[in-house]
Image (cartoon, rainbow, N blue to C red; front, top):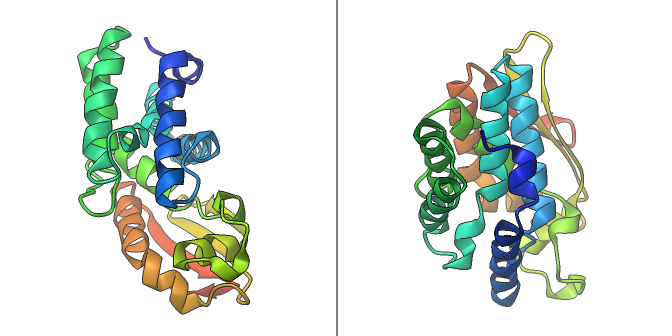
Length: 219
C-alpha cells in the first residue's frame, strides 16, 4: 500500500507542488505550498482519527490532503478536477489499488467550493482541512497598504484552531481576528461559501459545524 510518507518524499510530487505554487505567486494568490498541504493533511487526519475511522482511511485522507492542490500546476481554473486527474496518474504509476485511488481522486475532485460535494468521509475531512487553513503566514504580500481582501482576511487571523468536542457531536473552527486589518463582514464576503461547505462536510461526518470569531458564534 502507498503510504503518506512515500507521497511526502516523492520528488516528482514535490516538484509539482512547488511549481504549482510558483504559478499562484505570479497570480497574486496566498500560499498554497508545503505549509498549506501538510496542514490540510494534518487536520484531515485529526478529524478522521477523532471520529474513529480506520487507520487506512486516515492515511488516505492525509494523502488526499497533500495532493489536493497539484492541479494549480495546470491552471487555477478547475484545479480540483485537473488535480484529480494528475493524482490518478501518479497513484496508478506508484501501484496503488483501484479502490484507494478512487477514494483519493474523488476527494481531490470535490474540494473546491465551486463544485465540491462531501461525497465520502475522506472528501469531507479534506474539505474541512483545506477551508479551515486561514492564517497570517499564508500572506506573501508584505506591504499592508497594498493588501487585497484575501490578504486582509488571512493577515488578520492571529490564531486559528479546529476542535471536535468530547461527545463527537460538534466541530468548531475558532478564529482570533485583528479587526484593524479585516472586519468580520470582510471574512464573510470571502469565506461564506467555504463555511457553508464546511457545514455540509461536517454533516457528512455526523457533526455540527460552528464558526467562532473573537469568541462570538457566527455560524
